[in-house]
Each structure stands twice: as C-alpha cells, then as structure tokens.
Image 1 (cartoon, rainbow, N blue to C red):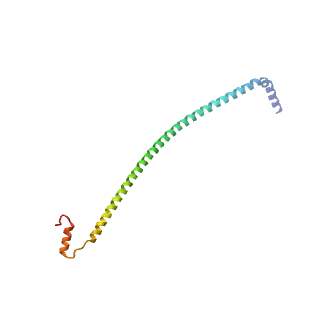
Image 2: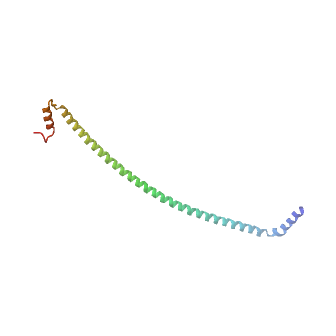
Image 3: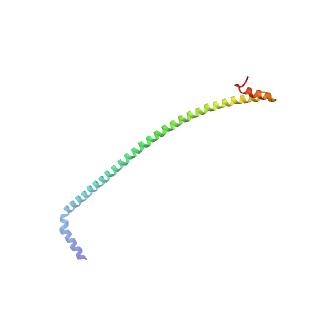
Amino acid sequence: MLSIITALYSTVSKNILPNWRIIVLLLALSSGWWYVHNLHTMINEKDQIIGQLTARNSILVDNQQILTDSLTNINQSIGLMARGALETQAQFASLSSTVGKQTNKLSAQLTAAQAEKKPVDCTGTIKYLIDAIPEYSK
C-alpha cells in the first residue's frame, strides 16, 4: 500500500506540481464559466417569472376594472331603487292621507245617517227609501 502512495506522490510531484499554475488557471476559468452560466440561467428563469407575473398582473388589473364597473353599476341601481322607494313612500303617504279623509267623511255620513229619524210605519219607510235616492225624490 505504501508503494502505491509513493508512486502516486511521485507522479503528482513530477507531472502536476510543475504545472500548478495552469491547473489553478483552468480551475478558475471553469469556476468562472460555471458562475456566469449559472447567472444566465437564473436571469432567464427570472425573465420567465417576470413575464408570467406581468401577465397575471394584467389579468388582475382587468378583473379589478370589471369589479369596479360592476360596483358602480350596483351603486347606481341602489340609488335608483332608493329614489323609487322614496317616491313609493310618498305615494303611500298620500294614499294613506286620502284614505284617512275618506274614512272620516264616511264615518261622518254614517253617524249622520244613524242619527236620522227612523220611519215607524210602512208609508214612512217607503218615503224614507224614495228620499234616500235623490233622482226619485219629489
């Protein structure tokens, strides 16, 4: 085993050690080439990622615009509905007032009709019914 190590050492010391500068230079050049190649690979990958992210960002901007337009339309619809609700509320208030006035008028007429003198015999009843309709009264 010692003889193998001795032979290896003598081969290295005779063939490689005198050319150590060339070996170091080759190692430095190959390391530099590997580093530059790695940088180019990373740059290409980053360019692809940037392209994908730019496309996704464009989609997001378009979607945001669509959502903004939809929200604007919804807000306008809500405004129209609110105005319609206010108009309907005003119409209901007017209707309620009209119904209230009619109810009061009918209540007064009903009270007046109930306060009238009631007929007690058949002739009085016929006269009462004829007088109730203005076209038939004499």
